[in-house]
Image 1 (cartoon, one colour):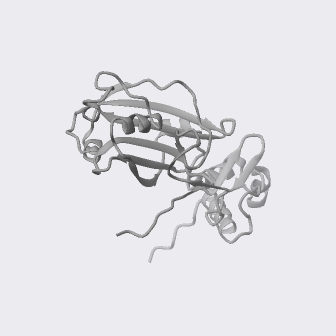
Image 2 (image 1 turned 45 degrees about the vertical axis):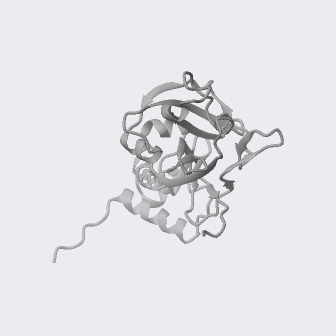
Image 3 (image 1 turned 90 degrees about the horizontal axis):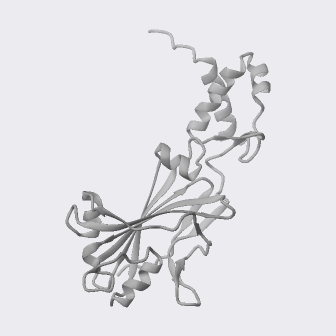
Length: 250
């Protein structure tokens, strides 16, 4: 039998730190030993230590804060933020998000015409290629600390025989009021999945290495369960959990 190959030094450093994070020796939110300390302890150069840290950043166990050092992100730690999901009305009768966060849109969203790709056409129950109004927004809150990308799709066919048959409707959530005025009684469903971001998404949402995002698809339906609009939300999953209320199914 061939003897097992000895691991590279940077992998040994990564394994050591990973084990100490998982057993609680280095608790979540606490700084790790500096590159200089680790280099001295393992008898290696600082670039070798940095390579080991890169391994842990890639799997989301460590974050590096500029000017402050390296900090632990334990997978066992409870998130600091819980955000209720859903739609509600405020006292003025406007639709708002259930989390009550005051989002600011960076630039006024403008409607663009797009054609429904196969996957979205299936969800909206329209023909592939049907024209849609599409809005893209980058929204921020808490002085820019919270960021989300929000996209709204509205098929042209939904707007037939409404005041918006020849012009773009407002984006969500104002869109909900416009749909109600067109005679629809609304309800919503959401599908949530977690995935690693594409490079441009990581840049837009300012995600640290190894941090996945929540990709949420919200479908607006009427009283006949006809899909009327689709929204996409992309949100950092770092230190965040989502809360949904529901009752027994019939």
